[in-house]
Image (cartoon, rainbow, N blue to C red; front, side, top):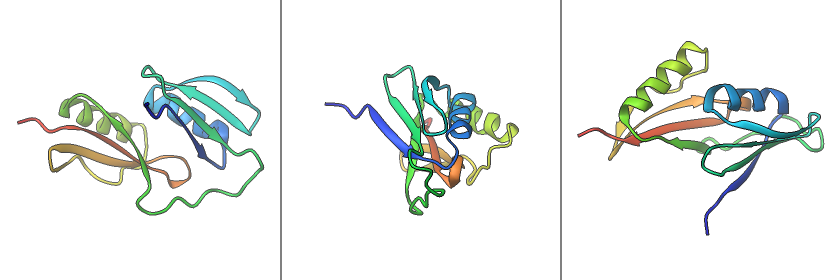
Length: 121
């Protein structure tokens, strides 16, 4: 069994959808007003962003994050630069941690996002 669906609570469904489309390559497959957008990626993840009942912005716990695992350190560095140039808030520079290199950035409603790959060498 594989986890292949997640739904995140957001304050602005359209803004969150546009963020993940523009910066992480998701495609929107369905949107119902400002209540729900369903996105997908090339790996089969069904990723929802929703605010079904007009809730206030979520308060994600400090250590909560989502992550994108990419194939190479070069891809981590290129993504870091691309997001930085696009004006995405970067919380950490590319850092080596254990067997990986990673950085953290901030998405909709303060959601922490990690991009990582196995470190070279």
